[in-house]
Image 1 (tube, rainbow, N blue to C red):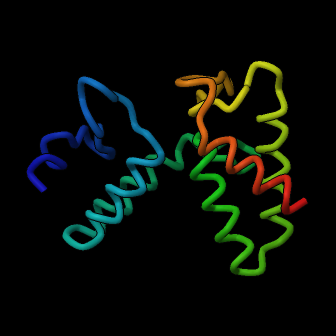
Image 2: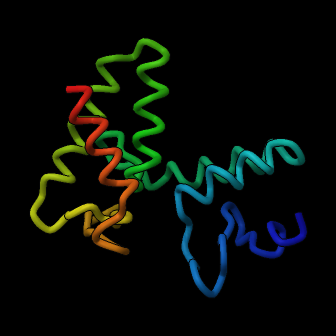
Length: 131
């Protein structure tokens, strides 16, 4: 808990201040899970800050988190919302410069990180199979 408190920058947590100085969807999700047991309000704040970067079409700027959201929407019978999220992300991944980007810049959709992430490829295959 001391590490999380030390890395708290007021509303969100830097996962590794020197290596990853920005908020990352994946890390924020796990940080929120841990915080929920000790400080539920702060856990909610972590996720609320993350969703401040949500795009107008519903995407949160990390493709794997979007896949988890898609699964959740489908599990709760929200097929229309799930289909919209799936299509928006497949369109993002269809761009020539996207490759299988590790993540995308939330405001410009620029492909960032490694261009060939296996989890992004696996998510795309799952979405294509569901179509």
